[in-house]
Structure formats: C-alpha cells, structure tokens
Image (cartoon, rainbow, N blue to C red; front, side, top):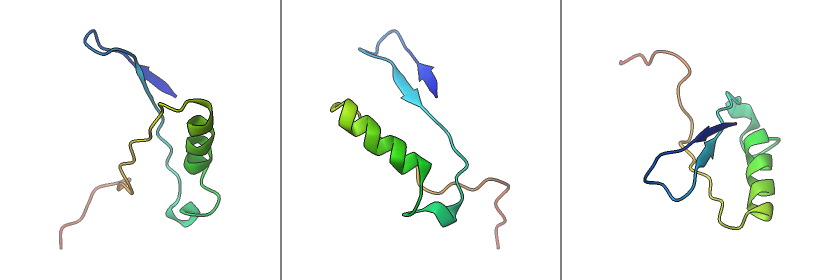
Length: 61
C-alpha cells in the first residue's frame, strides 16, 4: 500500500496495485476482499477502480 499526500488535500490517499489475473475476477479477488474490509472499517472509504489494464505493450490491429 502506498500513501500520497499533497498540501491542498484535507487528507492523504492510499493506493495499492495488484497484478491480479483476470480469472480471479468475481471469484477469489484479493482486491475485492480488501475493498470489502476497508468499506466496513472506514465508511468514508471508496475504491477507484481503473478496471482491467494491460500489463504489456498494446498491439494496434
């Protein structure tokens, strides 16, 4: 987990980056498990989900 702080922000933001396989989507996703636990503990928490991102160079066809 990484913490970012900027002078103009009222509080820091935290982020994590997992290279989780697409096959885990909707099953045993570690990201979804962490998201659920953080929502329970911190009501003001929200996840910014960038969706599925490529892990290498994209090939234009």
